[in-house]
Image (cartoon, rainbow, N blue to C red; front, side, top):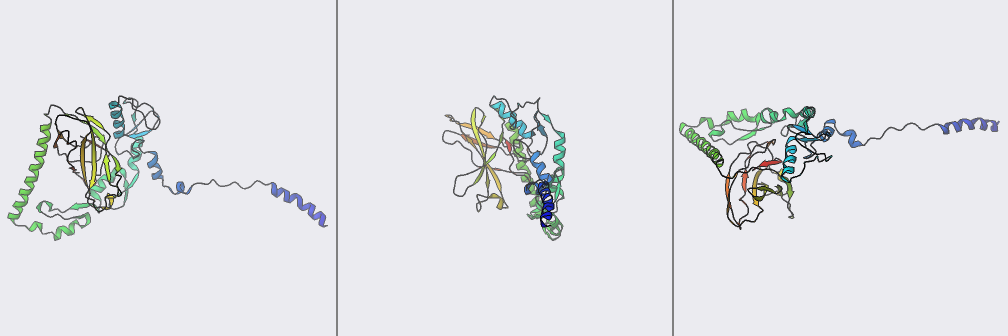
Length: 330
């Protein structure tokens, strides 16, 4: 009986051994599973040149690779200066004004992607984030309503009403108000003088314009310092380099992000050898398709064989939200 039982059990055991193992579930990486859809779209829709999302118009080559309109014009300008054919950084196909087209679908998709407000941390569509940060955010930094009368308070927008109630600037005497009005008038006169100086520059014999792109670098010091530098460019028959610095961060020179007050300065270097003095009026402006609004202020420099750089000049921005952009024009 024992032998029969063994014979009957043998086929069943062999049948169980011949069964196929259960299908394994496809293994997915934890990083891809936890990554949000908007984060994956940010990588897909980013510019192939600056690797950032386009903020205005979006162009594409004939193979569909995307680039923001600022980088697109920068590629064309660089190729023209080098007497070469502009090519796509991804597929190396030729880029011309006739072959590249605008991609409206990508522009609309980017405008609807969520982005966090830099002051309150709320999430808003990219098409509304600038208006929110400038006019609607309750945590945005605003000045006092009586700033022109001498109050230099600034703080969150939701505290403005309480400060206005406690501010004593509106109780000034007529004599004190007259001094404030004189100060406002002098500031307007200075701005008008700058504009008249810019208009006078248009009557110069030689006028050259160049759009340059600043890239971040760090010094080789033990405590590295951040600075921005452009490629060499040619103007007025000479070779130049533009540098920009983040100043007012003496306590943390290697990490300017830990300082609440930061200022930008620039310096122009002449890389060509000259024998005769060269007098130049320099004006730094916002480049086309750039988001940084620079207050124009021309400055004069006399170059010679011993002095091949300008003095460090401040870059005044019209908005606190503005940061150092990728491009500038001189």
